[in-house]
Length: 78
Image: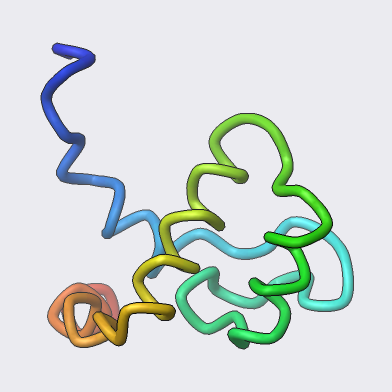
């Protein structure tokens, strides 16, 4: 995959991947509350894919773009 080309699966992963640990273990990333994402952002996001996913969902929620995820959630849960 071209590293400069956006990965179309990033948004889909946000509606199917669950938080692997902590207070919200088992909660789908797109369903995490904003206050938790804000806390994580201040504390420091984890390295790797999970950190990227948390940063992405934080930006989506911060900018009121959750509607982007609705079609993907419906596709995941028909």
